[in-house]
Image (cartoon, one colour):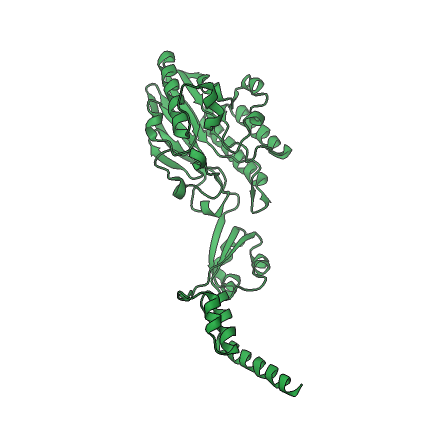
Length: 391
């Protein structure tokens, strides 16, 4: 007897753009692969830990893609348990959730719904899925005026205490879905530039001890996979949404529950419809070097090391890299200009060539004019002086 197979995924961010480009087509490819994993691996339940949509007002195309993937997951033989994240509108995501539940699609968005577990049984008995929607303290503290609920940690500690009490009454195995920063994943280093910071305004990192006594905890919010303990994990997002995620694999956790609780946990890779590449070098080298041929169909961020920022660099890059979408100028040589301000250095100049040289040094991160530029400036100033004398 194999027990129950759960596919843990999160942070779909349906509707998000990548540097103004729609990601719906690429996400559809990833969802097709997700459905294939469900069918091929005999997955019983797909657990989606928040941030289903990228915004509180999803487009009709985003709703259509969600409808399609949920229908196909159900056709592949899986039930779905889904919670709202900080990007979602709980009201919009939870619309008609009561009717969806009749089809095995369980959408948990109401603040009090965490104590209404979705119970799905296998040959070993019941498994209770406790979905915790993203709970800002302001959304829940009025429901429990006697409790101190000012931070995300306090809210989840209170919620999990109630869940553990409920577990003791129900018996059986348990899975918790939560969308948060958990201890062991420091927001400043682990979060990409896509995740909205939920540590501001008193919301904070949640200690792992909060999630004690669960057979498995499916976390969302961090876009890279992470194993905090064997039974507490982040799956990460199924698609790359930022160049800061370039090194993070895309996939989902395949979790097995046996008769006693957590069994094997494997990683299921998902395809990357278009890779991300960060290329560093001078513009001419990026345009001519054959070693970059393999990156021509990638999303490209270029870090140009030219001493002077090249004119119209993005258009030049896109002639070779059609999907170049980001550009940063980072000169290879940076000279310390000293403690004097630009204005002080200009006032100290004793001649027009020194003023021009000071300006060029300022706009070039401390690098002054080349020999050719100095000669050209001298020629122009001499010509201007001659004209002034003759006029």
